[in-house]
Image (cartoon, rainbow, N blue to C red):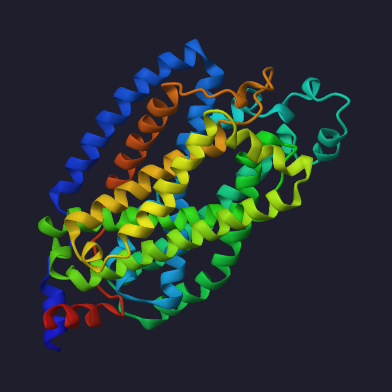
Length: 407
C-alpha cells in the first residue's frame, strides 16, 4: 500500500459536530419564520402563495444544481468535484422534502396562475389555445413526472457514491459516468419544462425559448457559491482543511466568475432579442419589470448579480482569500432570492390582473422564503452528516491528496 493510500485509510472523513449544530440552528430559524408565515397565510393567502413560490424555486435551485454539477463532475473530474461532491450529493437528497413542499403549490395553484381558473380567461383565444398544456390536471401529472425523473437520477448518483465508500471497483465509477451523460440532457429538458410550468406560466401570454437555460445557469451558479461557503466553513473543523488551500479557492472563484458571465449572457440575450423584436406579446413582460419601482429592482439585479461579482472576481487576491471570497459567494446566493422576486412578483394575479404592475414589497416575500430555506438547510445538514465528507474510494482522490501534500 502506498503512503498516500495509507494516509487516506487512516483519515477521519466523517462530518464534524458543527454540521449537527448547523442543522439545529437552521431548523429553529425555519420553524420560527414558518410560524410567522402561517399567520400571513391566514391573512392574505394570495401574497403568501407568491412568497411560497419564491422560496420553493430558491430551494429547488440548490437541490437540482447539486444534481447537475455532480453529473458534470463525473464526466469532467477536477479538484472542485472531489472536494464538493458530498456537499452536492447532500443537496440532491433534499428532493423528498421538495416533493412534499410542492403540495401547497399544487393545492393553491388558483391563487398563482390565471390559467388554473377557466372562468377568468373564458373567450380569450390565447388561453384557450394553451389550455391543452396549461390546465390543473396535466400541471400536476407533469410535476409528478419531473420528480420521478429527478429522483431516479439522484438515486443512481447516490447509490453508486455510497458503494464507493467501501468498494474500490472501477466499474462503479464507470457506471456513474455512463449514467451522467444522458442525465445532463434529461436534466436540461426537465428543468426547462418545469420552469415554464411553475414560473413562466404566471404570465401565460408570454414566452421565451431561452428561459430554461437561464434557470440552468442560475442552478449551477448558486450551487458553486453554496459549495464554496460550506467548504470554507468546514475547513477549520474537518478533513477539508487538509486539502483546501489558496489554489483551490482560486479555482472555485474562477468557476463562480465564469457562471456569472454565463448567466449574464443568457439574460441579456433574452432581453436584447425581445426588445429589438418589439412584439406586444413579448415586450409587455419586460415593460412590467422596467416601469415604476420595478426599474430600480431591475437595476439592482444587474449590479448585484452581474456587475459587482464580475468586478470583484476579476481580482486574483479576492479569489484566493477565504474571508473575502465567502462574502462574494453569499452575495450571489442572496441575489438568487432577489432574482426570483423579480421573476415571480410582477406578474398578473388571479382576480387582480393589474396587481403585478404595482410595486409591492410585502414582508411575506422575505419571511416565507427564509422559513423554507431554513427548513431546507436543516434537512441538507442532516443528509450531509450521514456520509463521509470525501468519497474514500474515489479514483481521483489520491491525486487530490498528493497535491495537498505538495503544498
